[in-house]
Image (cartoon, rainbow, N blue to C red; front, side, top):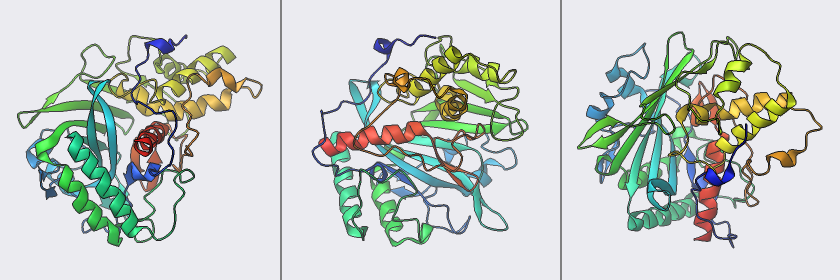
Length: 384
């Protein structure tokens, strides 16, 4: 498999070097703590509202597929909480060169267990478009919020993306969380909600479905998934009973291109653990490229490849000979000399963990793609 770098779309405009890292990864992606109580907590709900109306109106929630087959839609609506917030200065719409400033929110249903609170393996994202003036105001307010509640100096260059440091100790009871909620709902709501994307779990908890919808006249209209020639949904399946590897796995609607496409690897991995060194290298290049925001963006990469890349990379890395020159991957692997790209997820190798950012059960789950995107945005904000 040969990747053509010139064919990739670049997302983020960079200055040569940020003079001061005023923005860190946790200033771009805000990961909420698991709440102390599943039903009564201080995490935002779908119908939480601010200046722009409800974050996700109930009528739109009812248009979504069942997030979990064990619960009715109104139950899931009540169980769902905001698990992460991301800001982006350049989401590639309408074009990569004329892009949108956005706030994005990641939602998951939470439920009580005998010991604590856990999450259901389903999620959806909501996208909110900001004007240039709104984005500037939002970033100014976020920095003021940080200065107000920061008790110790934080080295943005060395602080990995994690549950936000302000919320780790007191979880959803943290004093800064309510003020953060008020700040975010000032800039996001029904009035500027533009898109919703969904991941659901089906069959015997071994099929993951993905779809996206645009907001048109207050309703959700299914939109095409990149690289799928107009298809509006995509599925990944993996019947493996444990969490490390592939059995009866595959992509139900794979892209037709071989570039940065892990479909054939996943199918092969279900029948044989034997790969030639060249095959391992070629598929590792694909996984690294999929995770690299300088090579692919959400408008040029399909859902499944994006969500399975991390575990596939971990699986392939174990099969890579120690003698292989790592420079082979330098054109594909995202690097950032300003920030640590360490992944704090509990199980980066878990092939059943397809979360972009949020929780897999009670475990923190962050994809390397999200870490890389956060670094790219933080670098741009620091420079600009």
